[in-house]
Image (cartoon, rainbow, N blue to C red; front, side):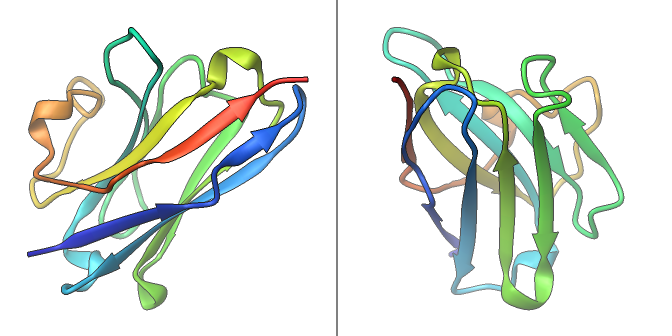
Length: 127
């Protein structure tokens, strides 16, 4: 089955930037839509961003709009999440997830709609 591996997390100061990567193995990524999610301690997992199979549709949580950019390179079987102007509230474990079924603006952020998940990468924003 599809395997996803996140990388790129770390400790960054407020206002800093990170680029997360989600690499696929076992299958090519261009058959799947990808969502980025995050989960902070004591909070529910929440959708951060979404990208369609060819990258033609992208969605963002309100908290990510204007600061985060999702993209994908299907030739490299990798999806990226560029995060700028990071805030302490962005501190969480970030996960990428995949599904075959396309999502829409109304439902992309629902974790239960995704089938495959990575193990997560920690992002900590602190001075």
